[in-house]
Length: 198
Image 1 (cartoon, one colour):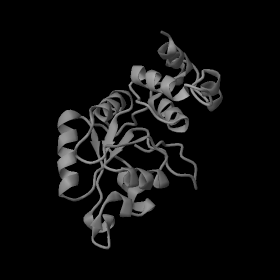
Image 2 (cartoon, rainbow, N blue to C red):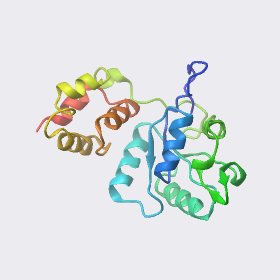
Image 3 (spheres, rainbow, N blue to C red):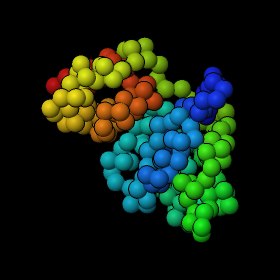
């Protein structure tokens, strides 16, 4: 679902987490909208990726957005069985085809943004699925907070992010992606601090 207050001229913000197949698909979605995006790396989805998708499904809801081809349909069916209340977004083959290759990465930003607009939420209504309010888990986390907590710019930051990410269900990532996931999952400073405690 698109945030209602997206400013004119800015990329629309998708409040659910968008699930795509590959890294190029993720880049194409991020060029079209402001969103948290998880890529499955095809059909052979690793358990840590499924755990990340499950956390997003429970916190923000997810939109399954796979390629309009046979492999994409198989991945969509598998994910839908695992996450039956997931929202679905689609492109036509003609929108996603370039030089005989079919994939979301070939679609225009306009078509991608349109496909993701007006999707149904995980509870089957057209209402917006909002992230957990910031005040439920403390003020929003900033990049400065990550530096202060030793989660960025210090020896052992990657390992520390990995441990915190495992506890929070958002996986390991570089500092910028970690911060994006915290924001989209509605994880505030207090919840992050609690995840860092031994």
